[in-house]
Length: 251
Ligand code: C5P
Image 1 (cartoon, helix red, strand yellow):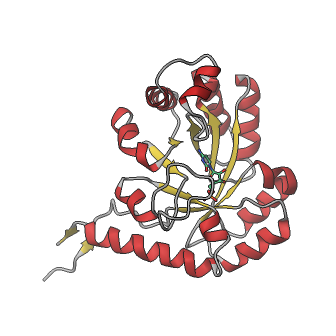
Image 2 (image 1 turned 180 degrees about the vertical axis):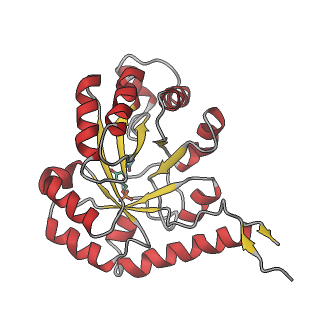
């Protein structure tokens, strides 16, 4: 009998991005030392970047981690072009911009990446998950929020971006209106439905992956766990079992 070979489309790299929501480099390096680049990627947001700066980002990259620099650029096209080029040169794996900056801005963001020494993935934020329909209307946008999110995702896709940040509930709809390959990066992940913190629309890691989410952004459930390493490996184990069970094997 021929040996069974895993379907090559199986996701073998870890889909977990740990959100480093700290303002203290020491705490970050402490946590990072307990984790491993084989098990997760890292997200550096505005707070940590403002405190630790590009040097900290480079340090994480040199440690072997894939880093998502979550600075959500939103400015005139030329400024975003230069910012994306500078950020790419830090060696990060993923960058993001606001889709509401428009097609010209997103295309220039992409150009900045193409011209840089390293080419990270470029994704867009459609509508902040903190925004309600009422908040959107206050900004002068009267379109239904879900339609607005889909429109912005399509604009990001047409601008040549690699994907969007979205809720795991929106993955199917977004991929349907763009492409199955258009990446979906999903925050709002909780290990049980009971603990939500300040997230509104939450989903477990397994359900999010079953919904075809490509990457899961997880902060507090891992960073505030008694043992972050054990929690991370437990999550991966639950996902691997799902991926394994649902995989088509070839003879
Ligand atoms: O601790 P928690 O798992 O809620 O962290 C989620 C992370 O994802 C935070 O860094 C948060 O800023 C980020 N995020 C989010 N919702 C978005 C975009 C980013 O929660 N729409």
